[in-house]
Amino acid sequence: MISVSLSNSIDWEKFEFVGSPRVERRLSDLCGCFADEAAYGEALSHGDPLIYSVSSQAPADGAGQLHYGLGMIAPGRVGREYYLTKGHLHAWREAAEVYLGLAGEGFMLLEEEATGESRLLQLGKDRVVYVPGGTAHRTVNTGADPLVYIGVYPAGAGHDYGTIAEKNFRQVVTDRGGRPVAVDRAEY
Ligand code: PAN
Ligand code: ZN
Image (tube, rainbow, N blue to C red):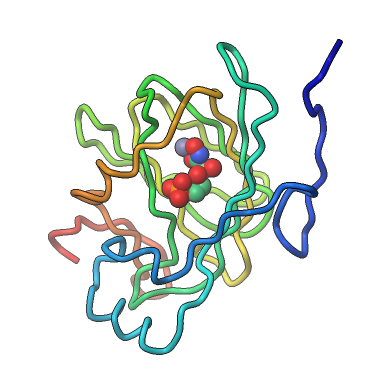
């Protein structure tokens, strides 16, 4: 007998799967994520807006099963740096992930843990990004509307936020003359 939840619908007003609440990340939750600390402090002094949310689905656990999450990043910037997710590695390093863009415009910043190599890949409506195992990933909204996507990953992937929290990504996704570019953190 099939006992897991097999389908879902998206509530486009709340940006969540119907029946499963979302986790919210506000500006104050993102201490240490943005490169420009003065701009971060200045932004916080004006309020604590919602930066992104994730509504997760874990239909089944165990080998071979998948989990997935609906992400929404609000449009906006701190200084010249676009609103972003904390970013993470999977605790089970081999675990890969597929991101399916549903709405909006943005990018994924990938950083291979073993080599430090960075890649900036477009994510938005009708774009799909594959995140290999052993690769830290962060998502940024570079558009004027919410960036909405689904990430699908192995049930046992787990999330390691600590490694990124310690040293952050090597690159920063920033606005240069109205266009998004990735620059080395040291140069920012
Ligand atoms: C995504 C992320 C989502 C939020 O579902 O969890 O984009 O980003 P952070 O987890 O870095 O806050 C995913 O990659 N799951 O594995
Ligand atoms: Zn992930």
